[in-house]
Image (cartoon, rainbow, N blue to C red; front, side):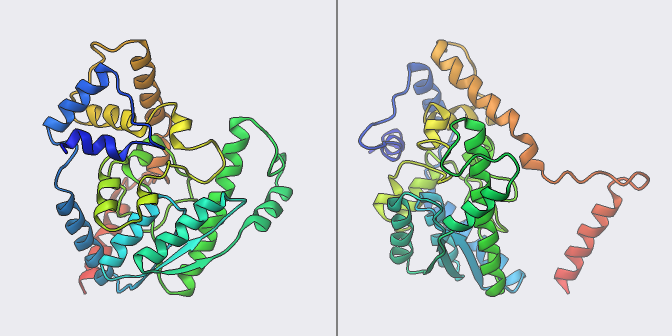
Length: 315
């Protein structure tokens, strides 16, 4: 099986292989030729495990807590931390959740041999919603904006729970976002983020599933339809209106300065514009918080603080 076939395999949802126009097929071919879709998955694993091991030693840590959504990202993140020698606790945190998603999270913990705990936050979520100003009922309100607001509350409740557990264990929280989600803004500020993000540089359409498969993540998780579990839509790709493979082709093409609209038809242009719009509209999330310069000293205080951090770590 060649690399293109491997990529298509991991992007097949419920038996349906992604359909690429000739325009997107040609760009995928170019990206494969320049190595934007890396074939060195084992090297990626080895370096990430090395970095996680060094981070653990540098900060004298041993315990990591992360939310197990039932998706591939959390399962792969857990696998990487475990291989790096961390004590990993996976929490399933259902909030009126599809039981199949929760069960996949439990199954992943078992398959990876990590500790598991479940905290059902449904009642807590309902209570918070009932106290917020002009917030629709948890099961009501059909607009996208209302669903996003409720989804953000779910993510922030989960993060409160994760940080509480991490504090109890004198550990930290693992972040499970991938590079495609980071670029698209498919995450909640002060919600589904953590302290260390092992897969935040990996593409959703290729590196994440290929590495997860290599590391023994259950097959039902590797091939599950991507979803944030926040109740916004039927899944990530349903929110896009196209696949993660389409998104990554545009994203990686732009990052490698080889992307052009030449030869794109009306549907292709609509996807391209949508990807660009999502990246542009969510840039503020990737630089949060914004550290303003000191009115008189500029960035000197920040630089000095970073130097102090470096010096103290070396003591």
